Length: 67
Image (cartoon, rainbow, N blue to C red):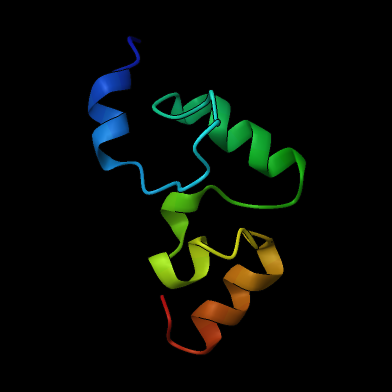
């Protein structure tokens, strides 16, 4: 399967600029899962910019209706 890096980058809402995984979704997901978190694309901008992308923050966001 081919990775569509440029198309993925167009939809990536990650604000961490030096990230070398932007557009490489499989690498990004693997990286975040290893640290008990989720990539930026799982969060609205108000949460993403805090860089707290933990499973716990994701669950809180769902419970509060933020997602």
